[in-house]
Length: 341
Image (cartoon, rainbow, N blue to C red):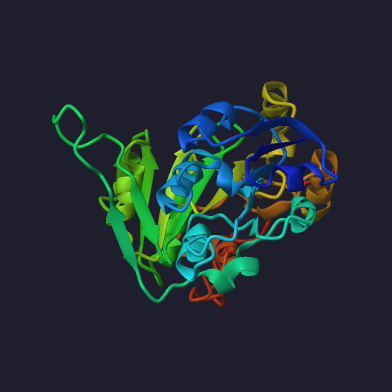
């Protein structure tokens, strides 16, 4: 079901043929919106931009983007000159906010047909790159706040999170292997959040941070092409521009997952589901998609982590848009293993 936060355009939104399970009206700070809805399950949120206090200040929108899944938000813009400026719209896209419109009638369409990046790429200005750290002294004068606000403006950096959905689905190893593939053609780094398993790879270029410092880490590396973020099982994906959700499709792992959260595949709808350490063939994947009512983005079998080049991972990265990678190299053991039911 859907929720709405309305103010100036309340009457127009109320006239839409949409079912809502919760509605609030008025002006709210980002913190108040986050407090009300960050742990509230909903399909889509219709957000009247005038319901956000000081909404012309883009940092207010950024506070929401860092703490909420903005792919589920449809932002109704007003006729403000600032909000409709190329700079403001570009910053929305940079934050991963793709579903925005000035037309109330378009909201119903966006619920069923959410935008992807290609639908809003024309608003994204990439000629100028700038990162602003807006950290200020705290009220006690003891130093800087522990979690500064960092504004990412007009940049081409991709921050890709890798997150386990089933327990221990291999996010750490996959992050390391993807870094090895990408660094052949791209400027890339990999960082692990709130854990220290990277130490076992004996690779001094791998980085570690905690969830409070992740935004700072991204800001300091804005000149790179790619930052890979190992989110492990519980890391927040709010700082990532995109996320791969790893599922190890073994029977026991899947049963544990469903027992833990029967709505998990509803929550993953429209997201990039990657089967990892998979022995499924195409027919098995079709059965998996049918039973889970989901779509598999990519299928990764068990891979040899000692290989310098892995064609399966290359295929995944090319599908994600990393076209510089060679696609004519091959390694033994790169084919999928199959099982027959």
